[in-house]
Image (cartoon, rainbow, N blue to C red):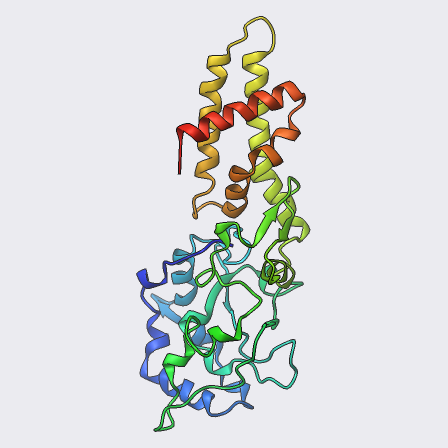
Length: 304
């Protein structure tokens, strides 16, 4: 998960702002026991263009999130339109009707891969650390107060959700997660939000461990070891050639930190903890020391 501040750059899908939808949400807000009023074709903003059905909400979210799952950062070209606050019920409280009044709220929708959203993932989980909002707020004329439907405003923000939100929280500051060479994530913040997010979205499932390890750790190790073998073994020792080669390798690690890249959060962590994660995996202590020194020199020459 990476922080994402791009929502203001993209238009809200037209169907979510139509008069018909606004009228529908008023009926839903007034009917907590009638979940049949919630329509998938509205929150997905389905419409037909040239005889072909498109999901405009998914298309906009895809562009906003670089075609990645908002939770696990895997590439996902056809993500599910996921409700951050579940619309029809809450796993942790079977008396709660769900955040039904947010079913068409644009800020409550995120792109999610199937595994993060269903299977062993989030589903209707939404644990909080404070008092749960149990229903919508209405204006004096009995209309839904839309200012209270925004995720970064009172009263929703004051619930203190355990699940991190990429547009409200800043997972890429290093405050919530650490990574291991096998791709595993671990929560590190005292509130436990990092670890709860991992568990809720099943972010340590086997395929993610393998993908993170392969795309970040193994790829980096392979090219480093290839360079060491080429430039330092045998009589044709070329330390300057290795330095030039490693500069290109380390620049690629910087590129992997771009928000467009899959698992960029792990790439950030590896860059900041290179001696902890990469150096011990070198074949010999001497090679590890040489690579550590080369990386330290690179970081000095390439300050943030």
